[in-house]
Image (cartoon, rainbow, N blue to C red; front, top):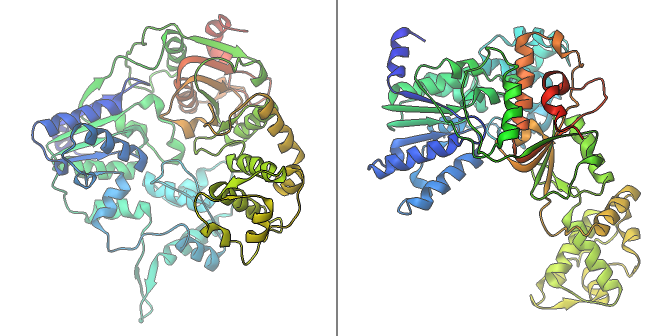
Length: 537
């Protein structure tokens, strides 16, 4: 970036540093509302966030105050990729369920599955294409990045073959044997906008979660920033935990502009604020120094030897956070052993409510009772799902009955072709209901858990819950690197410290530190032993 451009951007840019719970997104929304109140039209404002969910929530909150606008009026409230896509609507975009399946068929290299980091920044679940996509976002040579990886899933020649095949797949062969670009992926769209996109006629640019932008995405932001009158960029460098995916937090830290630090956290109480500052103080100079305050409440930080010791009867909702997916799975299994009802960040529940309802309905009709048409549909769909011999060409006939009609076992047998096989639900559902599942179900019932209600516990990785919060947070210290943390270089230390800081600051009331004696254990005690010991149980 030239000095003249830096000077130009410095004069019209405000960088908003928002520590956890200080409301950086809310600050941007208030600025949106202020501009609308001043007479700006929605299409003169561009608001960029990382997920469609975040963008939609922003639009909904603004429209709640400005009811004269429709959702379509906010046409520049988008993700970066969606904004780029807007200009190239005529170019096909790779579809994960169709195009990539075709590529998989042709080249035999891709498992058609996506990682859900940011929902507009999905990465192919193929190691080679993950590295390739990261290299493009980092603006580095893919082969160089390949060589930097400590563990390689394929040999270099195969790596080159896969990415070359992928690029060939995105082109169309002409009659003369030449190929021309035909389809784009998300990263292609960003690059094409930088190279060919025309200026969009808005006057104000707002960017949220800026610490997670990659160098390529920053180029797009700079292009937009040069064309507008005012720029607001919000983020928190201390929560920059996507460097593994190509994000470069230094570009946010060093972006020219006036800095504004939000001072008051409405989430963090005194004790959690103190603990989180212990983590920050271990980062050295690899961060922007910023002072912020707690909400003044006491709160608490505890240390436990396992999930069994955690006081689950405390008021409020819970997050149980792991560093990696393998530890998350261990925690989920331990929670099942304890009879805890939970879900992950994507609302996948530990016990399928449809299964629970199907059990109840089955028991009811086997005992001579009746169920409604809606209940019958729920039960029968589940029976079909487990493929237990209940399929019939007449299976849908009963669904055309009167909405208020009720069905007993014999009527379902007649209408749906259901076998006349009354018996305990454990036998009927056994294909998807193993002994351990029955044990877990019985524990839930004994504890009086209402499976009709959403679970009060989320168990997931720190990365998956970023941006979320809960009254109580359990932070599991087991991770994926040896405990000799002090032997690592400062940059690697800071990367890990940012992850733990992000996890610890999800809590609104109590933070529970879950220690283990495992070799791969983050040394919380080494850096925060004096503070922890006060709350050691």
